[in-house]
Amino acid sequence: MPLTRTVKSAASLYFLLPVMAGVVRHRRRTVPQSTQGDIFQAAARVQLAIVFGHVSLNEMRHRWVAFASSQPQLRQVRDPFTELAGHPVEWSQGKWLWFVPEEQNHGMTDTQLAHALEVPLAWASQNGINSVATNGVANTDHGQDTRANRLSDDRRVAWLRDYATQAEQKYGLTVELISLNDAFVRTLE
Image 1 (tube, rainbow, N blue to C red):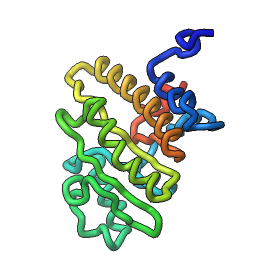
Image 2 (image 1 turned 180 degrees about the vertical axis):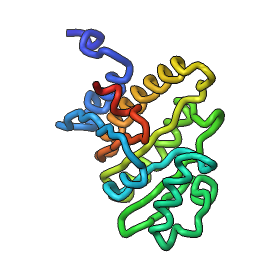
Image 3 (image 1 turned 30 degrees about the horizontal axis):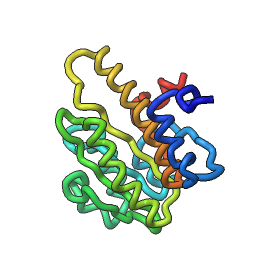
Image 4 (image 1 turned 30 degrees about the vertical axis):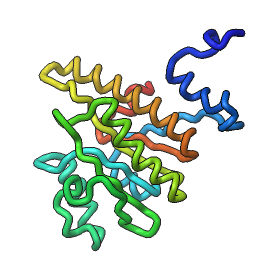
């Protein structure tokens, strides 16, 4: 059977290339865990939490202050997206945070997000980390239209699921996608 009939999408082909090249053997494709909740609570369950966002008069500020106040080494950090961004921070023995500030319009393009995830995931694989959680980030196309924003969020969730599935295979780790809103769980129904 020709390869074009067995591969349904470019993402599937990307997944199959290492297998076809003999690099990956006998790995089964998994689906990342999708949950609704607080990324900082997830940080206690996993070895690395990749946290996207910003701190201002928002829910992230409330969550960050509650989390940081319980960690002596983090209490003095007011804005982790400026003070701790772009590198791993060990907040407890074997538990790491990696803060990624959002870009234009409180979001990131697919290309920006892929790069923002690749760096900490590569670091995780090189440092024996096998469980990661991330809250992801919206696309840059959000505006005043609620319906269009929700469709954009659903496309971003699908993109993140596909990316996380590939990352699980590439790096041999598990990825949890978590959000305070229902973005990751509503699309499973």
